[in-house]
Image: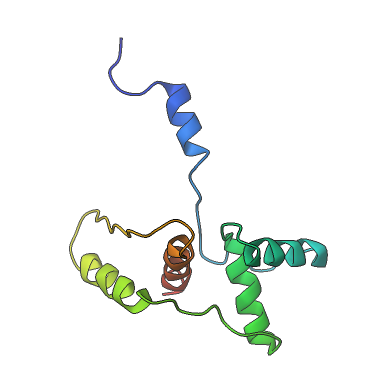
Length: 117
């Protein structure tokens, strides 16, 4: 018997993995109803999706909207990540927050912005 998690455990945990890659939405067109539904769900309290950041960015570029608001802690979190990136290896940044206070949105916004560097 091998030690460690079973293949089914690993497979289930990978379904929770959300990967963001550069130019993820470049060249794609979306049904306007999907865009509207995605925005409405977010503003009604649903967790953010990467598409929310794309929608906001495109609206800003088109002059039809404003950028995502940079929440408190944005600059500090970016600074922490930049400091850790100077060292070789893998680093972890822990963001402690209360549920529903925007911690996930903050973390995703930072990753979205850093993905453009």
